[in-house]
Each structure stands twice: as structure tokens, then as C-alpha cells.
Length: 195
Image 1: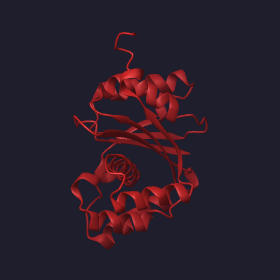
Image 2: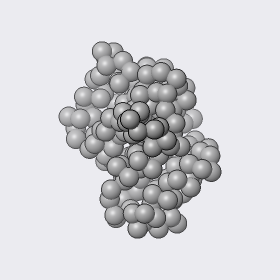
Image 3: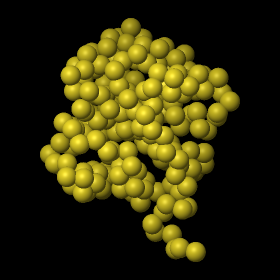
Image 4: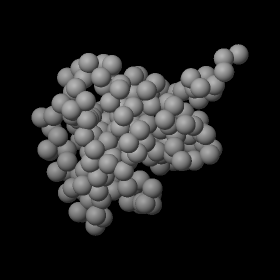
């Protein structure tokens, strides 16, 4: 099993943020990545990034990847949030499997992000050597995680908008969305005083 992690909306001061953990069975990784690359080529895009695409391309990309063999777990919380304070809590809830071959994160993440994730992996008895940073443009798996994190955040920000609602329901119906956890940022922030 291979895990790809990405988030969406953590820079915003309102609405929601999401953390997506995408699971791909190792036997299918090459097939999944190849099909994502084919989809990008057909759409005439160099690499998929949720924030850079309009709904026309998002819909076409989602229609091409929705049947691939993956599952996703997401954490959703309201902004403003402090990702550094929340990461351990989020990763402890989302990364529960033991048979993990590798964990990939976007190489553009700051060092503290990688260090927090390493701590969670060590606490779970998973070798930190399994953690890899990759450039999102060169990793179809990270692009998949980015797409799903962006979709879930858009759905929670605009639950009545037709496109996000349709794709979110399809993720659930196809049993791709294994877990969605909503966090109350105030209640889960360990740096806020208890009342």
C-alpha cells in the first residue's frame, strides 16, 4: 500500500480546509499513475492542480480517474486553522494501516511538516524511511490527492453547488471515501486554554 497526502484551503481565513490521505494498493500503483498521465495528456494539461483548473477540466479529470483503484480518507476543519498544530491529530486518525510501503508528500512542504509526519509514523511503529517527498508535477499520486482534497473542500464550502455535490456523492457511492472526519478547530487545538 502506498499513501499520498495533500491538503487544500489551509491558507484561507474562512470556509474549510481539508487534509486528504489517498491510499493506493502497491500492485496497482503503476497502473493508476499511468492512467492519470494518459488522462492529463488527453486533456492537454502538463499536470493536474485543483487550484489552477476550471470546472470544465476538473469534471473531465474526475470522470477519467473516478474508476481507478484508490481509496481516500479526509479530515475537514473550519478555517482559520493552524496546520502545524493540527497535523499530529489528523495523521493519527487518518493513517491507521500497518502494511504501508511508502508515504508521499508534496516536496514543497516546509521541513516542520515533514518532521511532524515522521513523528506520527514513528509513534505508529512505521519506519520514517518510508516517507518520501516528491514534486507534485512529477507525481500523479500527489495530483490525485490534490484533486480529492480540493473536491472535498469545495463540497464543504459550497454543498449546494452541483459539480462538487455530484462528485462527492459519487466518491461515497463508489466506496472510495473510506472516512471523513470533521474537526472542531477550537476544541481540538491543543494550544488553546481549556475552559
